[in-house]
Image (tube, rainbow, N blue to C red; front, side):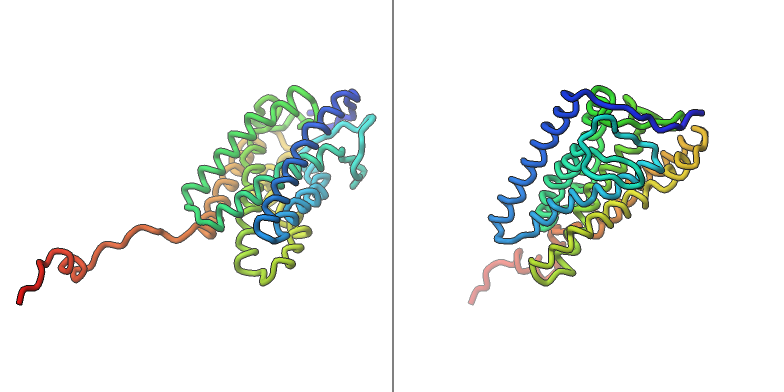
Length: 272
């Protein structure tokens, strides 16, 4: 089997298109976070936006074990770790994903949500990823999943990525919401989201992805990567459900009336 990392480049127009598309997304995320911060008189939405950019620092490690490659020839490089160059549009992509969805979900959780609602949101994100990601991968070639042992591809993308990426986005929102509610005692302390985003993002990815990471990174055959990718999908769903149980609002169902309450409602007026 072939596992060599492809070294390739994009046309200047294609790279510019990626930067414009994700740059507009990052700008939209910034506008939303600034609006939310002004509305609440707090800085935490902006800290979440910044954390989205910091999360990209873990991307090179992930690329090594999962066999992901970005075009390096003629690349507008944001940073380089482990001799892997990460493009500017990657940072903009992360900020777009996390800068809009995470603050919005945090507000919804604060207002009160159910486990069912959170699970619907999760599977909605899975479907969005499946619909969106074939465009940058299969059509635009802005990044690649390489190696002959990549399991269960859908337009060039292993399907387990849809489940894990969606889990990380909603998982970061749920964990940040819990930290903000139960740990932070002042709004300025939300600066902790900047470094914490990197830890939470990497931790969530690894917590579900380690089975398939191990198979792909160890260059095992598809006989191992396919079932282990399904295990990873199952773990991603399980983690979302467990976190949803943690952050969901208590039941607001009206309790059954007591015997005394029922009597009070059925007794006629007291006569002298």
